[in-house]
Structure formats: C-alpha cells, structure tokens
Image 1: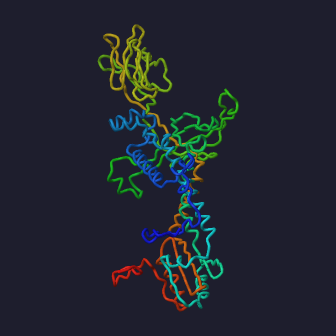
Image 2: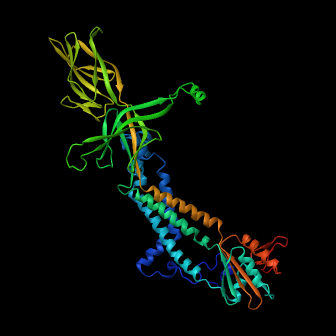
Image 3: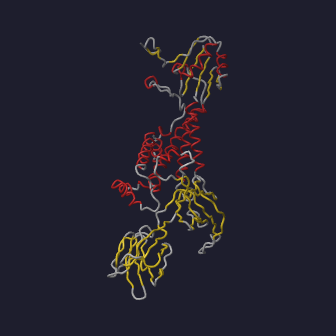
Length: 520
C-alpha cells in the first residue's frame, strides 16, 4: 500500500485496507461483478440521491392529493387552482409522488447502493484492522506524517507505558509495538449506513398492506360508517360534532382577537360511539354492532384501539341538511304554512294547509342540467346545489315549477303560485384520520443508529502509533483525522522521557514561510 505516489497524492488515510483488496476494485469480469461495481460506485450513489432530491422538491411545488379538500376531484382541483401547470402536475403523477412506483424504486436503489458500498468497503476494513501487524520496515516510519528517530532507545518502554495510560492498547511482535485506540471511529460511516438502510427499509414497508394506514374518514352527524383497513370489524357513529370558539374576553388571546374580524376556533371535537361487528367472521351476514364505548375525539387526543389511532382532522359544513320553503300567490301573499324538506329523507307530499299541498316530482342534489326527457341531471350525490320540480295542487288544479337556489322557473303556463326558498340548514360533518404505523419502531431505530454513527464518526479518532527500539528509537503515528490532537497527546510523553517533539512532515513553519521537511 505504500508506493511512490504517496508524496504526490498526499494520501491522508494510508493503510485503510492494509492487506485486503476491495472487490469492486479488483474484479470486473462477470455480470454480477458489473452490477456490484455499479451499486458500489460513489458516483452512482450521489446521482441517485440527487434524483431523489429533485423529485422530492417537485413534489412540494403543489400540495399532494392527500392535502386537497376531502371529496374534491383531483384533476378539477389542480386545474382550477393552478391552471395548466397544475393540470400537467396531475397528469404526470406528481400529485401522488411519494407513493409512485418509480419513487419507491429510487429509494430501493439507494438502499441497495448503501448495502453494497458498506459490504464492499466494510469487509476489507474489518480484515485489515483484525490482521494488523506491529512489525514494520524502517522506511515505514519515515513515510508516516508523524515520525521521530532517535539513537537512544533506553526510555522506549517508559514512552509505551505513558501512552498506555492514555488509553492505548499494545500489540507486540518482538521489539515492534503497535499502540492503538479509537478503532470504533472507523466504523462510524458504516453505522451511519446501517441507520440509513433501516430508515429506507422502514419507509418502503409503509407501502405494504397492513403495515401503514393513513386514511381520511368523512362522517356526517348521526351516521355510522365502517372503518377502512379493519376488515369490517369496527364501526364509528358520529353522535355530535362540536366547534368551540375563543371568547373575546378572559383569554391570553384578547389582544389578537380584538384586531381580527375572523372567528378563531379553539377546539374541534367529535362525540363518537365505537362499535365492534360480532358477525365479522360470517360471510354475507348483516353487521351486528355491539357498542364498545363512547368517546370524545379532540385535536391531539385520538381514540386508540388495537394498533389504530383515530384522530380529529377537520370538519365540513358545506353539505345542506334541510331547506325551508313557503308558497306565495301571484300577489306575493303567503299561502299556508312553511314546509321543510329534509334532503336526506325527502317526503313525496307536504300538506301546508288551506287545502294546498306541494309534491316533489323530481330532485337533483347537485344540479347540472335537464336532459332531453326533462329529467334533472345531478353531477354528484352530494347536496351542494339542490334543484326541485314542485307540483302545487289544490282541490281543483295543479301546476309545476322548477326551483333552484335563488331561482324559480314556471314549467306550466300562467302559474298562480310560486314556491319561494326561505332558509337552509347544513350538515355538520367530521373528518377523522385513521392512522396505523407499524414501521415507526424501525424508522426510529434507524434514526437513533444514524445519530450514534454520526457521533462516533465525528468525535472519535482512530489513532495508531508504531514503536521500534531494536536499533535506536523509532516512532511513527497515524490517525484518520485530527493530527493536531494526536501530536498534543504524544509530545508530552516524549518530552517526559527526554525525546524531542515528534516531527510533522506537513506542518508549516510560518516564520520562514516553508514546509518543514521539503527542499526550500
């Protein structure tokens, strides 16, 4: 490992793989060797990291699909809010970038690169450190950055004892000694790699069914829904959704509340009843729900069951629950009583008194248009833009009218009556998040291991000192970093035993402006 290029290249970490060859540097014949060389290449690893970084950056230009409003059509949302770039963003699949197959492949390739590089360099390093020899040729000492030769070898043992007190372990071969400490430092990068591999492995496990769940659940008040990813075993009923507002007085936010005209919410809360299906194992059977318990799900106070957590995420009150109407004659006089249409459970006829009745002939929850046959077409089943065809009847006649929000159109000619919209009431719906993460212990372990490796690689130095007292006193020293600290450790021991300070072939004499040891 010592050659004529040493002085030219100034190899700082000489003898890293002393006596052991790196596979990727020695073999390149078979297909396996070529694949191995590809994944052990530092350039390939850096290129993969660069591609992942660029892709991750693109994924933050617009929000991922997970963060768009619940129930919104992704294509329509990105196009309406971000125009042509948003449409292109959706069509290229960047709206679900982090779960796309090609991003997962990149993560896998990075993990393979780390594993291959660690094995390729770690195994030779292990063999090199395990098989270190204390006996070295005299020229070896002179070629070390830190070295010293002295004719007096009487105090060699005292020097060795002094270094042993500083934590060095001694290996002897005759008159040759190897003093070493901080070998763990050489494994810092490989411990880093182990932590990163676990992090990547845990991240990839999130795409396997049953290991990671992050689902939004939309429940209107009074409804009971089956929880996804639970195989029909668990159900949740939304008994009531509560929104608490900060009061204007008596809180630490008084000054802020006085300077804003907006309503500030202090708490979202869903009062739920949790059920377990007793017929979950009976194929085709109707659910038999047994109440487990009542619970109030609040922000940062989830309901926990098994390996799942049910969090309060947000709420929605955009869906209409009911609409109230009144009937007026052609003179604008109110006829009969007001009537309320419950949009989730429409009645066919509403008796409003005075011999009058209003019948619902057609209904569209989200009105789009009227087709060729005169039927109402709805875009979605969600009641956000209702339209009705009402038939107003008395004892003698009937007439039809089309009613949309803020718009009424006569269908029959010369209508005497018109149905007027009065008010509406909206549903309160809660949006809960069902979470399950069995990969978190793996990711946390990987992160801790990575930090341990970072500490070891940063703050521990691998230091080796060779001493030979066969023909005079010779000492050479090497470290993977911080030669200044190594000199401060060796020089006091040498001075105590009558030797000069150790020579540093790379130290500069700033007074003379030259490098010691080289020709002026």
